[in-house]
Figure 1 (cartoon, one colour):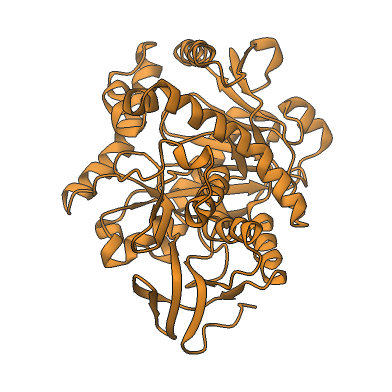
Figure 2 (cartoon, rainbow, N blue to C red):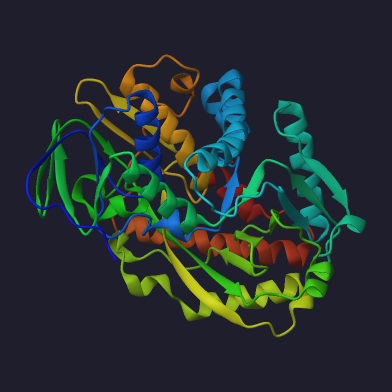
Length: 434
């Protein structure tokens, strides 16, 4: 059952627009700094309705922009500080979840990224070498004898990732916040905001500080319409698999997986022994349109099931029991941000490009420090105060976003056909945070 909506005008110390992980983690860490704060969270649907509750369950150290890209934009020390913060955040998600009494199936088993042809193996080696040069990530290059995916020549193992159940995390966090006095008003649509005031369809909230935490759904509001692009990512989950099947697949509990293709895929072994598997491929919709029927695209679900069977033939004809999807938020320069305006007292964070399960936690801690005037290493990270350029108006936005998806498909086909790194991918790299 949804929580009660706002029932008229209200007052708070902090009003948070958006009941996903960014807003909820911000509330959690604000209360750690000042338990007396009166906080109200305003959510159009239910807490965790969006990407926070629907994602692939990777609590990883991934950031939308690569370390090399951050170094070019902000300098080496800033890039390394961002990497260290992201790696540390994986453990913080586990620590904070335990502290909040949340059982979200957290298990830190790392990520296995398969290299399934010669081009991918060269990319794997280059990634490990680059990480060694920065000296933060402890990546390992595994040989073919250690991996079980079909055709895999090796893999990169990244220990800085945990498997969890995202819906359990976000719903548990909402309950934990309510037990600490936070008011969560669901089925409450925010129309606009200004310093000290949030206007909704059910009343006004006057607040000393405001946090905007809408991610991809921000595109539905006029003032954020071109600040963020909603890109759909879809997922499937199989029925529970037998122990002997898991022996053939070779994934332990707590491990997540992907490979080095350009059209992104991602998966995990769930706590109840299913394969949960997702990927890109659903198109961007004209005008940044967001509708429930876009969450389910049969051809994408079919492609995901086919791809999963190609990766792990041992699953045979295992049934797909769950299918779902939704939009994530993409900034024009693939650069997430965490910002605070001390004059207007409005904070915001987002632009995670699908790497938000951990990054939202870092955002919550960072915004809490910024809003309370706490001097910390977090407030000096290079994403603090970053402002991405706006997306182009239509039809350029529609053409560009969908051309990008086509380019990634073409890049994978090009590499399979030529056995060489894709020229299309090289052209797209600077546009996708690499």
